[in-house]
Length: 151
Image 1 (cartoon, rainbow, N blue to C red):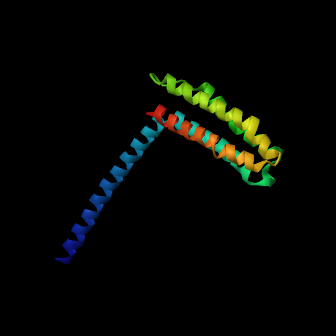
Image 2: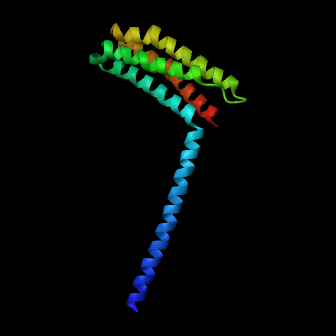
Image 3: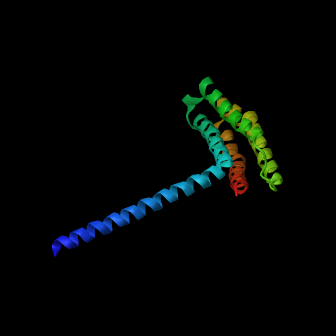
């Protein structure tokens, strides 16, 4: 009698594992499908984040203000601009896309004309106010717009 319980238990476990694996595979395919659809603006958010992080490193660490970090700050921002230039507005969302482009351009201009020069010249407080004030608002706006454009 014990032998049949073990057999039934093993059989139940096998059926459960098969169903679990099928569910896992289906979930993975759904995740990939959704991610592929949301890819362009998700990738843009990643690029914006890289640009932001490069600048924050420069702001926070005085030993990271040399030519290499300045080049990284410029290159990451240029990568966002290049990606945006290649993108097209989703149908019916042209106004939101234009707002995203305009917000990025203002963000980048302020970054290049005010933030980076303030950091390099040692005016850390001035840079901090802009980075964590107006620039943070623009960043939040861009993230919201990317999310809305992905839907």
